[in-house]
Each structure stands twice: as C-alpha cells, then as structure tokens.
Image 1 (tube, protein in one colour):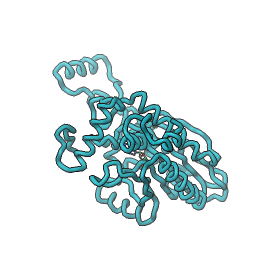
Image 2: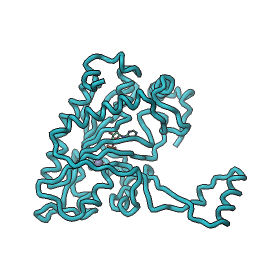
Image 3: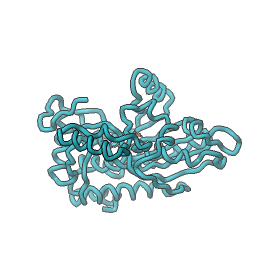
Image 4: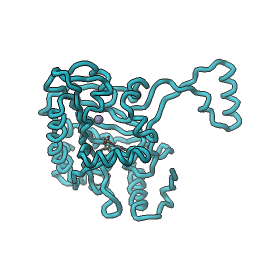
Length: 315
Ligand code: AMP
Ligand code: ZN
C-alpha cells in the first residue's frame, strides 16, 4: 500500500478532499496526529460530540430489551480463530506479540536496536488478536442454547483494522457501537431490518444526508470477490452512507446493518431451543465516522451548528 503525504496528495479531487478534511480536523484541534496513518488522539470537542452521538444512538435503541456487555480491545486467539476472520480478511487482522526470551535474547534485541534495526522479530505471538468487530467476543459466550425468541446485546468498544490510510474516515483504531441479536432466522432478520429506519432517522436528525445501500465487506483476494458478490446478491449487508466528500468520491459508510445467517451459530455451536442452529444479525455505527461526518457537514465548532442538529444531539 502506498501512503501519500497529505500535503502533496493532489492526484484526484478525492485525494484533495480527504487531505483538506484531515488538515482542517488537525488544524482546528479536533484530532491529534500520532504520526502513523489512521491513528489519532482526540480532543475535548471530539469527545463531546462523539459522546452525544452515542447517547442519542443508544436512546434510539431504547425499545430493545438488551443485555449490556463490554470487552477489552483484544480477544483470545481461540475465539478469533472461530470467527474465521483470518480466512476472509487476512489483510485487516492484527495480532499482539510479547517478549518471552531470556537475558541472552534480550541482549540480542538491544544490540539490534542499537544498530538501528527493527527489534519486533524478537517478540513472540501472544495468542491475542486485536478485535476487528466488537461483536466477535460475544459468540463464544453463547455456545449452547439461546431462548427461542433470541437475545439482544448492546456492545460498545474498540476495533482495530490494519488499513492505514490518510483518509480521516478510515482509521486503524476506532470505536463501534453494535446492537447484536442471536436467535432464529426470522428474529435475526427482523432485528436487522427493524433497526434500519431508527438508525436512518437518527443520522438524518444530525443533519446528515443519508442513503441506505446494499454493501459488501472487503473480503480478501479472488475468492473474496465471489463472497462479496454473494453478500450483495443475498442482501446480507446494508450500509448507511453519507457524502462526506461531496461529488469528489463515493459516499462513506458510517453505519451498517448485517445478517450473518448461521455463520457464528455454526462456528460457536449456538442453537435455539428447537435445536436449530442460531442465526445472528448486528447493526452498528462507527463513533469516529459519524463524528467526523458531523464536523465535515457542519464545521468543527458545535456552537455554530444548526439549532435542530444541536437539539437532536442535546449539545
Ligand atoms: P463494518 O463491520 O465494516 O460494517 O463496520 C461497522 C462500522 O464501523 C462502519 O459502518 C463504520 O462506521 C465503522 N468503521 C469500519 N471501518 C472503519 C475504519 N477503518 N475507520 C473508522 N471507522 C470504521
Ligand atoms: Zn457485529
């Protein structure tokens, strides 16, 4: 992957639009550049807006009977393994490693470091993966039987995807809020389809122009292209997209609504009371993407935003 310097990325109107938004967010003190593409610190104004977004989002799901669960930003390799993520998205996956050597190996590491060489090779895989989607650690907890009417979970947390980019809408580390249902094929479909209007209304109330479009995940490689086609044909994924860069590029997904069919039910051996393999579905919004879409649409000073937008966000 080529990383272009944002100050010289003037190839296309889209590159220029991305560079301009990134420059504004940094210059206005909304984001802090951490020196690695897609990795930012966030300041007070960013946190105030993203908390307001999340609070409004949770309110829009208040009619659901949910169990709240929170997970760390890393998950055990064994759980990650069962999601099959590495088969579909090897390029986005990232693992944790740690030092397990002795004094001699430590001296070798220090010598390599002294020579200005990279020293990460001296670390060993720690059987931990960075969580790419906050619903993943849930399924392992549900192995066994869920009630026939299914169960619904509210999960917020950190996601990591190894997709370095200078597009401020494409981060490596970000936060996602998901409402996940595990139940029958019908209850999973009803959850996914039933939440779409609420999320569309929510995002529209923020003064964002929203379309709900059929979408696919970025499955890797040649086989992946087939999987992506199937996903669209079977209408398994919809995205809430907004034109952050106007006419310069395609609208960006700030939320999604997904049907997994029996994927996780089979992998994690989850069944409903009738003995059938459970189906699952999740709807999600990305906190950074919604927040940055708001800054792009209304500017970085919430005090100057339209009154109805501030009201919708209670800002
Ligand atoms: P997905 O599981 O890909 O549908 O992602 C759910 C939501 O997370 C998306 O709708 C985005 O809001 C957010 N998201 C996904 N990838 C990224 C990324 N690289 N940077 C920031 N937000 C992301
Ligand atoms: Zn999910």
